[in-house]
Image (cartoon, rainbow over all chains, first blue to last red; front, top):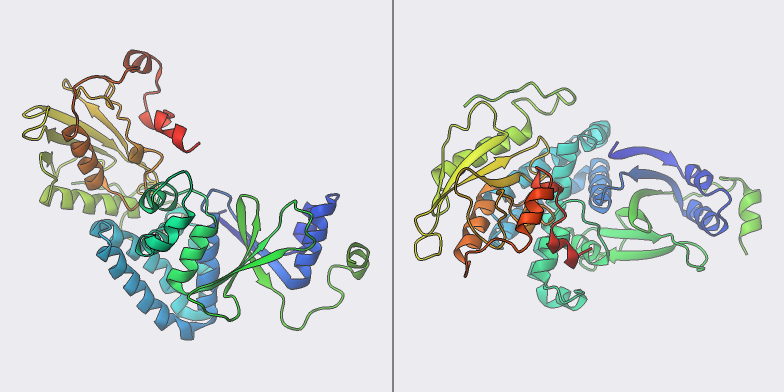
Length: 249
Length: 167
């Protein structure tokens, strides 16, 4: 499977049984999030996870769909304006559009979205489209992004070697650019071996949107999965109060 | 041109008319026949199977390869365009070039590591034309004889030296 089913965070607790550092963080995570959806770790997980979470959001917020279509059309013009080959821009935009159109059928489209995201070709069209959008954003804002290049790479080389090719992993630069290009706020929860208690949130606020993040992702070194926040009303006893008591201070 | 539509086992719902990769290749072929890069000739009849193409190329005027004829072979998998095509020179005349081995394998990063679905047969042809055109001295890669004795038949299985930069 490329995209798994939504499962309770309890699964993560089981995964880290006996691992004190991670267990404590998972328990912290579980106070904020109800469930997780795993993405195949193939180097495309950030893009696939974001694409899924964003389109799922659009299924649930159909009022945003028109605006989304306009921005997709604008992105195509941007890509053509930046001299990406017309043939492939059309092909990739179409491939993405076929999947994105599912969101127009609202919440009842979600099972279909899940099915299509697990069809390798359809799913990869979404990934490659988002990769192109990031590449366009980096090139357009070259003056800004060149400050973050490492090993003497130019922005263009960066795009050609670690943005546009499939299976290349993503970092802050990709996330910043995607959030800005689509104006979608993304919250990434970082979970690693550091001794910092709890899971830090890094917010990527699109073009300065300062609202509730649309997409929540969990980052563990080298990998992203989708997170689903708890409802505003928090269930007090979830996960067993005994465990949380002993591990928090 | 005959297309085989027998691979559609899993997702019949979304794909109605041949697999998407075959439709993309068919469109690429049409556009390449209509507007080939300079010196490139493509026959619109690529046989029964769109997964294997033969492309003819003539060395550009004013370059070391002026007037020479070469043949490129493209092999595509059903994962195209997410998986790169396997591209080799075939036939009696393999260009003598520092990035082309005598068995036809080409050392060009967009054919493996830097391949992206935003590229196409057209952009690969253009890169190869430009690689030949910018050549200053006709010679084989320094490790040619060792490489052709030991390499896999599929050039995509080779860990090319340009990987050193990124790994």
